[in-house]
Image (cartoon, one colour):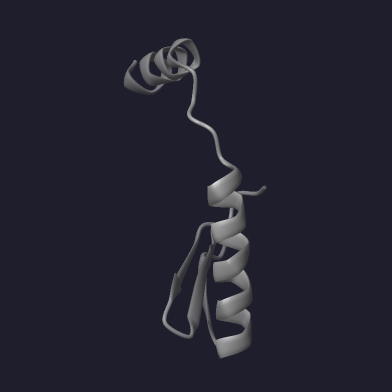
Length: 64
């Protein structure tokens, strides 16, 4: 989806913009946090395990 990591905690959403300059954005909004939490749950429930052969290919790339 993109390269902006985010965390949802309570009524807050934190996002890292790598920059430059690097920035951390924190949104303190219940509606935004609930919306992003629901979106995460929908995507998580749609997710499928990574096939073993694909996992192994990427695991060795990262290690080497």
